[in-house]
Length: 172
Ligand SMILES: [Cu+2]
Image (cartoon, rainbow, N blue to C red; front, side):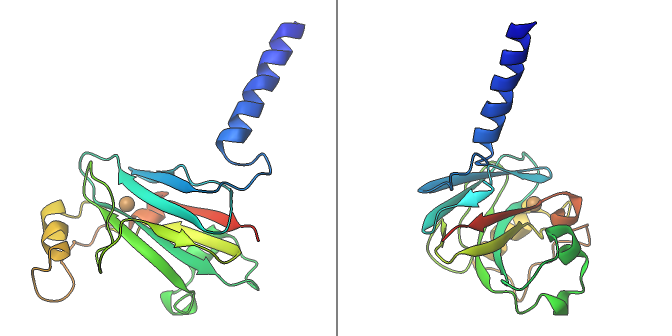
């Protein structure tokens, strides 16, 4: 009986450490994985200057990791913010995006670099707005600089509304 309780307690501790929820902010390189449809490996607390990389573990879907700052005076939850009309969050500061084709590592579609570094303390949202069922070939062509204007990714539900949204806090 006593042993069982100890094992259960140990498992709770391990789970807490894995989440970065043990009170210590995670520093250095943070490897985030995108899958259908969630982000894996986003810690609760992050140290200033941590660098995020992104890998897509899906075999079919394109995923992206967009990091957006949440203003300091904002008290609503991430779920509430996602429900707002686009114009109400349009001035939230964009921090970077990494787009990853199925099975590949994420890259900045707008230039060099394959990581996002966050320095300022505060709350941050991590979201993927790729529509469900988007054709990887279309995204690949757009990333290579082909095509005119934004790529046609179809009218699927953006992954953020299927669960691909997470939040972390940078502790100053
Ligand atoms: Cu996605």
